[in-house]
Length: 357
Image (cartoon, rainbow, N blue to C red):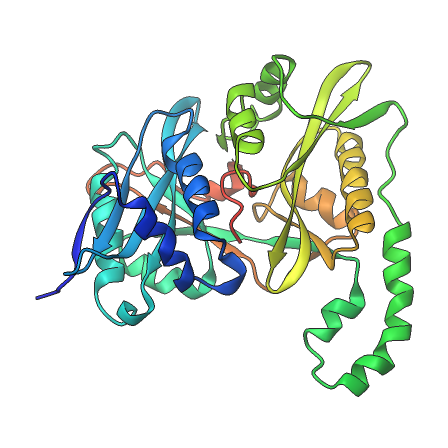
């Protein structure tokens, strides 16, 4: 019999959950106090009014496992539903070879419908895919990551171990790095881009119209956007609005983050009228300015395998990375599937829903 108990979250568990940060991959760790603040924002203090978290507890009462479902409103074929990103699956290192991992996942998946979630979904790292499929998730398809390199020397150093070879490569790699900082996407002067600290009512109609062509997308309203970017503790997002003739014309949200051991600038979300790529280019020009000023190794954006955003990124010098993510979904057993055919072809996906990478 397992000696660990899997149960719903109780008040008082959070300190133990935060201490589990010592057991996650180094580039995803944060101090326990900061994680506790982020946890409250992700699960408790959301605009959606639903909550579901499960924990593993050992015989001494210590928290040794955790998984939660972070709520989001989605527009799904014209219907608004609350679904959730299943995330922060953490198991204490000494229990990784036990059944605690699948027990946590099963408990969360069995419990989220009663808590008010329509389904679970999220970008999944390929190394975890096989395990999640065995636990009832379905693979909907690939989520490519596009990168634009800026610091070629830093990228090469990650793969070249010899200091002598690095020294030889440094001068020639400085030339493409300088060129990358100089080359910016071109956009008409009529489109202005400015940083914002809050979204107002002018954003509401824009997002409804811009995303109308997609069967599935996360809902973006002023209330959700303000929670997503400006209420998140210990995270700094640079959020820019594009305007044309004084009207809201698009936006991009950026976060500097560690990615695969590199200092990178993540394009968390970008939305523009997709029939007007010049607005997208104006926003990517701002991404370029921020990336060049910060001297990051690269800028990166995750999106679906087809659609206008991928094409825009490729034309702006972004390359498809060797490894991306897989979109997985979990639906209640016996319920008719909401995801038939090539669902990703009409799903607008970015890191908006979840930018832990």
